[in-house]
Length: 258
Image 1: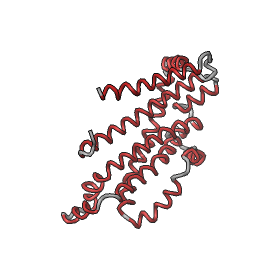
Image 2: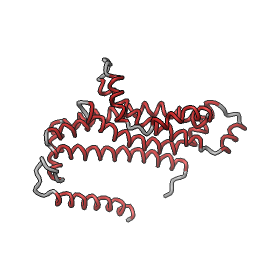
Image 3: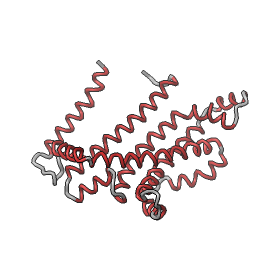
Image 4: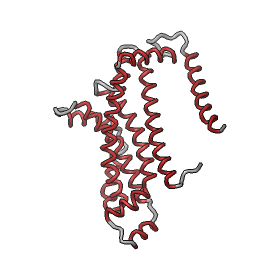
């Protein structure tokens, strides 16, 4: 019964939202703010044309690469910062200086850096670079904080058994910090998905952000809202996937409450 309630309540809330939305937009045309029905018709149109699938693939491709590179670079650097106080004192001020800068503000720099590249679409590289920036600082900071918070008793026990260097990272530091690192990855992925849509609205010719911008220029607000709905559902799916990984890790450790 409790499980049924957990499923029914969100569905009821969504149904109420759709009803209010439809009532508030009764009589609107697709050039106005559309209701759920016109949005569904627009979504069906771009699905049938294959436009939506191409743009989803383009956005996911950019996010996957940018986020993967940020993860590969950010976690090792975060471990070093959390483990080495001197390095933390040298590097952390620079990270904290760069972290608040909106990734979109880097777009002119990214265009300048990758504008002459020939082996890949420069706009793809620029978008991937922006996604990397949006994820890297969050992942690095979360990892450094997690490693720095590892209890000393674990480190002393490892030292007693002669565990040092990379073995210490692999057997003690990384496993102990993993739950917080996963939380940082989840937050970074959410930001990356927001940034790719914004970047695509400014500098590329494909992706969901481009689709929103193109539909707006053609006064097809049913397609604008349809693309927004898709963006929201993909973001929800990415967050759910990361939460599932977090829950699996906590369950493996026996830390998850039933």
